[in-house]
Image 1 (tube, helix red, strand yellow):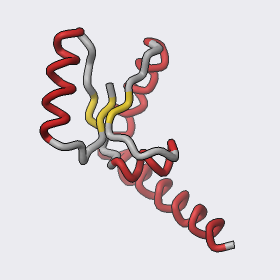
Image 2 (cartoon, helix red, strand yellow; image 1 turned 90 degrees about the vertical axis):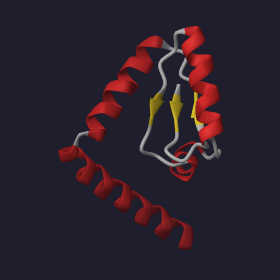
Image 3 (cartoon, one colour; image 1 turned 180 degrees about the vertical axis):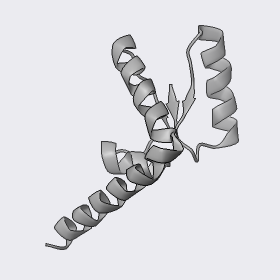
Length: 91
């Protein structure tokens, strides 16, 4: 399970409790619900990834993104992407 950075404490406690009972790992993303909405076009705070291979790859990608040396680069790419999207929205 992947949870957004701004998920409510109550929701986080509930998802952690259920995930612990089922033996499912919960990863807290540094992405907000709005960030996820920009990608998925749906506002969500909890994402379940059912495919184990994809979940593992996604987990590794998140770990790389959270490393300090990659965080600045990630923020730059995100900023550029958002500026490009804004430019397209204005056309």
